[in-house]
Image (cartoon, rainbow, N blue to C red; front, top):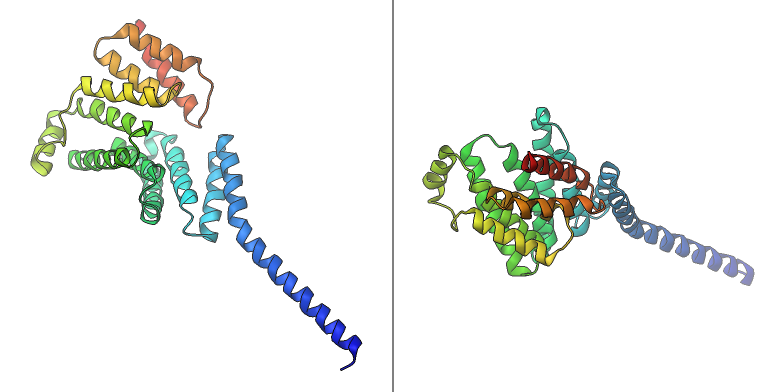
Length: 264
């Protein structure tokens, strides 16, 4: 083989190697690009489009815990915006959200964010559950997960909010649901009271200030305890805040509805 032929063969090998490297890099980079695009879409409140990007990332890399967590949150968000008439569709979305969150927890059990996504999917399923036994089972799981989150991070504001909502909702159980709790679980892991709910909501707002959802929870407990002046102040503050998350517009509507209820 002549020197020229050897040179041409060597150049061909180099070109082939470069194409191989570029192709491998493109395959590797794609999930990260899709995930970044998903985050941008989520920030712009384009939830359905963000979900597509996160699920694209998951298909490329099934072990991407952040994509699994964000996909779970998007599914919960989409389901939460559906009307009550579509409860079957809601349940399908919440179940899928739960599966994604569970996979994320399996891959990274020490991350509070993936456990939060899991709790959100459980809480939304609890809201549409009609069987008292199911509601109590969800309540037990939610309390357990919120407690685990605080063991991982004692300053995680969302966990305090979850426990505040847990106390608030369970303090309003009817006698059938209370009976189901005693029969199937022997009671709740801690005493139920609106005062305890208020304490948790206050802690959530202390660790994460100027957050519409937390202020609404705080106002709900304040109103239930007859502290309407404080509830009004909490709601007015929430209504003055800019939208920061896809659900904030709906949350402001709830704040306005509660405020109208108080002033009537």
